[in-house]
Length: 608
Image 1 (tube, rainbow, N blue to C red):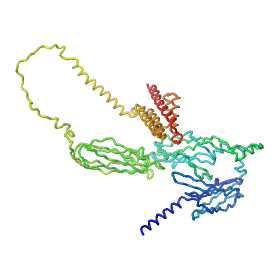
Image 2 (image 1 turned 180 degrees about the vertical axis):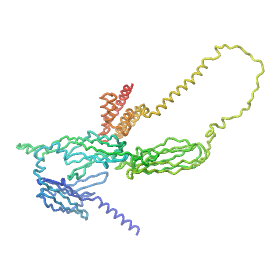
Image 3 (image 1 turned 30 degrees about the vertical axis):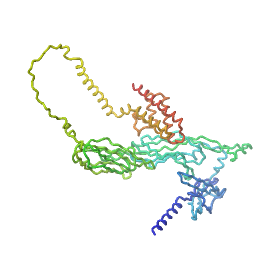
Image 4 (image 1 turned 90 degrees about the vertical axis):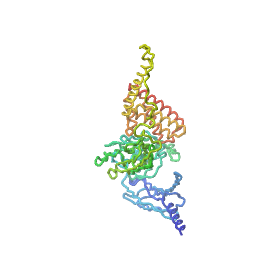
């Protein structure tokens, strides 16, 4: 009986998997047309297999005259190993009168089931000239292209709190035949920390209705933005250079040209068109000051917090690991692991952090910090609770999560010494066998010694040398304290060193033929060098700002152009990694090394 139930459930699951994913819908290239215009209506069936489609039943087209149809077409796509097929029945219609008309539901049979489409309402208004006639009379102008080809930037929200995620999606919508677009300018995100979402290597077009018209749409780019400052922030447009393939203008009266203007001969031409997305403005609010806990350190989102101590019964000098885990949705990259407060008798090391970031529609993941602590004194010690606070933009409240306290029972280990407490070992104190010696009473042979030889040269060296060593150590320590107190100075001095380390990683990726990773490391090298050298925070770094600061430092214009060329190249390959190759990448690596060396020399000379 149990096996029969399992078989029945599996059968239902199999049948449901076949049914789910089958869609039959109606779309039109326009929902408002002139009385002399034409409209194309599409009945599209999509699913995993189109071989079982039969008995297509069109609706009545009351108020319209059928000029062409049904025209049947089919397509098959294989994405990540899954097959998706579609069959489309299309009609070209001309209205017979003015008014609003409803195109009813079409029906089709698929594997024993009947599917019906949704009705579509088309409004016919008074018109004087058909769109088809216009396109035959003249070539397509820039304004005509702009109406049928454009980029839209959409944000899931236009107002947010500082640190709250805003998802921006760039879509290409077209009703024209286009070729491969090329990036001319990427958007800038001044005032935001940006995280790319699921890099798109190939454009995948789908049918979409936009303002009552049918378009083919494809997602160009999706990015998660986290505001780092409040106020009205602007996101600049995304620009593409798109080759548009259009029909060449007919020369009326020329019999030869009329013959070769026939569509059979493909008399078409390609026109370059610069498409720009709209500019987005986001209103960012400061986080509320009321109720802000002391443990709050800038985390915004929805998080979970947990801690774990690997052992509670230990011996002195035995290391203990305290693990802190923060998970949830928000800017995981910028999360800071809470600091712990330990009682006396412990030695604590800086935490080792690791992170796992999932870049889907919402940035999520986890960040783990591991504290290594070493007890030096025996006894019973208590680690107080650790607090983690974050602001939840949905509830508009601060939330604080506390960990439990941990009690450690510390026993003296085998290597325990008094040195742990007093600073002296038992071996440091020894009893002499003879602690009293007698005074010599026999005759002494005394002779006068030349006073000039009384104090030799090595004696003066022995006096001066410790003093010189002390002064040197003091000078080095003051310099080191100054560096440690001035983070920017440390970054400034280590900028070239850090850049060379990243270039070394880039060379390794190039040797492994990992072109995408190579360009990512090159981008980090040049951008990181500019951030450290120009005193730019990572969240405020933009290409235009960095190049402007270089110009203010009187850096040679040709050198600035080379920096811009490297950054543009890396950003372009991130969008289209398939266009990178081994030879050009090797040249890019050598060029980046030379540019950083020239920048270092140029900025150093200007500073002097």
